[in-house]
Length: 338
Image (cartoon, rainbow, N blue to C red; front, side, top):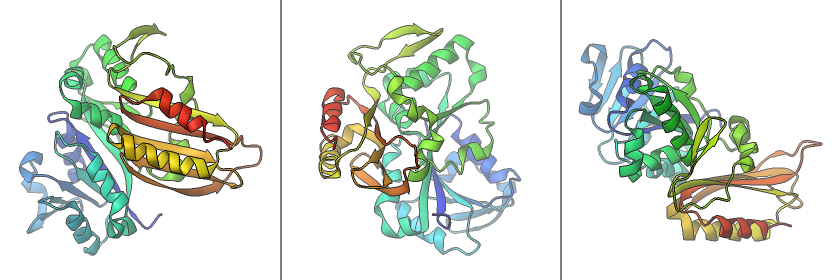
């Protein structure tokens, strides 16, 4: 794992503050070498005083980072970067304002050469505290970006009241209760809170997301037709009208002969509406934990470390997606019990 270059996918709505974050990465004296892949140089408004050298589509910055544009094929750019001497600490891929991060993430599951040299580290979404609520109503892409994220930077918090901030936070949590959330102004978040998260490292799914363990404490048995609000410890809880997360838990072992065909059939059928899926399973007769995760139809997983003595063997799954057939998925999973 360690010699693979970590790749962060950076997404966010136009004007949310992605450019501010990218400019910080390209100009601050953080002592790391990052390669930043942007869609268009024009968009990022690169400070030319900081540019040391440029060849065709790659600009070198005076803090050692480099910046290049994707004109066309991401895989080609990545392979080009891998060949450059003076390897990078990490690569950041920026997606356009409206883009769905899924295809970019899938590149790291599908292309063998890319997979051999690089690994997906996390999907980071920058959101604008003032406009996010409106965007979630009128732009499905904004909702995808929130649902897909491992890390959410809720930016421009100085432009909203405390009540508005609480409301927008509740809306984010209704869509994605699992992401790490940072509230910022001018994207002033420590770069190591954004980079080097290892959110896609199967072995660390649990360590990074303590919420994952208590996920089944959330109330999932509600009617998703309407947006409900109810007071809960002074915080309004929204259940988003079409996007939700589903957490399932099963005591004891799962039969892999039943589970594998079931999960594969499920993502083939419902894949377009399942944005992210992940799970840790106790397979019958297997001393190690089986860990998997998926992006739409693409699944990746294998047996990881052994269950520790005294550790409770149980299986947990999490899905984030649109109009998930909660009960059907729940019953299907329960039927996989050994």
